[in-house]
Structures are given as structure tokens and as C-alpha cells.
Image (cartoon, protein in one colour):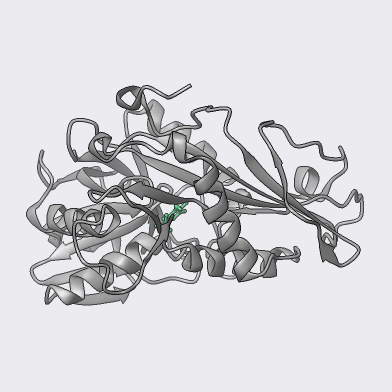
Length: 337
Ligand SMILES: Cc1ncc(COP(=O)(O)O)c(C=O)c1O
């Protein structure tokens, strides 16, 4: 049944469409299995359930202004999942297998790919998980690799709108030599309490600080932090930040527009000096920050009730590439025929 595109939110929206699974056993990946089941049978003692041996990705396919379907940067998502698999000692599919699986799942779910006018997209979620039953803590030489797709609505139905965030120094989502730079479930688990507490206090996002001095900004919820000061695009650099593919793309676009890109430590004290701030990621591209509250300093920095001109322009420029309205000069999109 075709979803009601206008009602879609950013969540798992069931379609009954196909997903695919591969299994790694005895040193080799199985052939792809296709199913419409949303469930995966795993052993109760599996490494993914007990020791968190799991990595995932999130990328989007868009129906363009020309009717063609574009999948955004699957090779970059492969590289990030491969880095996660290395850290978690999980078997990793080849780049070809990963990209083909994502393209295949988009093709098989074309009926659920929202029309251009809806500003919605098809979200593709590859998940890699250790299936080896083990009580001893060790890497898993057995794994599952599942790719599914679900249509998601635009983050901002009434146009891009600022949210408020709270600085957090009480819970670390990751450590400098930990797993913050890879997309694994444990990072999200370790940020859950602060996330829920912030929501209960009326904040939409948490601005995390690094775990040594709690002085430098890390991430903004499940997204990278970006700031604009004059002709500078500033974003934190740290070994415990997830390298956002949206951020990398925006940095390139910003450079093309004549901005100087600064990837460096960003002190919380600098928040006062920025013209515009935002969070960036696949989900919303850019979520502008309207207010940032620092509970330890007892002050709120106000950036405005509307999105700033630079972040709005960057947002449109990236969307123009994803929806085929602008030339894809870096070859970021794969056309799915
Ligand atoms: C912790 C975290 N940081 C940053 C991002 C943004 O990454 P990307 O732009 O690749 O979606 C995400 C979302 O994937 C995330 O979960």
C-alpha cells in the first residue's frame, strides 16, 4: 500500500517491502536472502545482543526533479561502516557488496520512494551484527548483514526551523580512544540518559563536550556541530566525533562558496562569537540552533528565531545536488535505474 507521503515522519515507517540479509559463516558470506519479514532470528547468546557487536549506517535515496533516483554517497558510508567493523572485530562485506546491496534495496523499494514534490526520501539502513553465540568476550567470526529501507518525511515540514540545545558535561557519549568515531550502537546507548533528561527539560538536542576537560564541543545529539562566523565554517575536530558525511559534503560546498573551513577544537566559550550554529546529519541535513543553554554558566546564547542566511544557503545547495537540481560535480550520487 502506498504510504501517505504528507503524513510521514522521521521514523521506521512499515511498507511491507523487501529487505535483504547476508550471513557470514566459515569464512565466507552467503548469497543474499530477500524477505519481507521485519524480524531477524538471532541466538540469545549472540555477540550483538550481549556485547553490543553491532554497526550501522544511514543514507538516503531521493527522487529528483528529473524523475531519476539518486542514492547519496554509498561509498563513503561503506568506508565508515568498515572502520566500525575493524574496531568491533566483525567481518565486513566488500565495498562492492555493500554498495550493490544498498542500490538493490532501493530498486526493490521504488514503490515506497516518495515523489519529488513531497520533499521526503527513502532512508536506507545497513546493519552489521555479530551472530556468534559467546559467553567469552571476543570478536565474532559469524555475522549478519541486513539492509532495509523505509520512507521518511522531511525533518522540517513547515520549513527549516531552529531548535534549542543544552550543553552537557555530565555524560560522555564517547572517549578519545573509544568508539565515538564509528557508527556503533554503544555510542547511542551511552548518550541516552542525557538525551532523555534534556528532552524532559524542554531541549531538543544535547551539545556534548569531550570527556577530558568538558571544555570543547563534540557533537550535537546524533549529528555534528557546525558554526558560521563571517566567512568561516567552523566544526569541531576530535578523535571521538563521528565523521559525518553530511558535514564533509557541506565543508566542500562551503569551500566552493569561498568560505574558509576550520576543523579544530571548538571551546564552549566560543559559542558567544558565532553568527549561526547548527547540527548536521543525513536526517535533516542542517538543524539550526536557535538557543544554546549552558547550565554550568547559567546563560543562554540566542542565535535567532529563524535559520540564518548562510546555513540556509548551504542546506539548499546540498539538497539541490541530492534532488538533481544542481550539477553533481563531485560524483556523490549514484543513479538507481
Ligand atoms: C553521532 C552522530 N554524529 C553525526 C552524524 C551525522 O552523520 P551523517 O552526516 O553521515 O549522517 C550522525 C548520524 O549519522 C550521528 O549519529
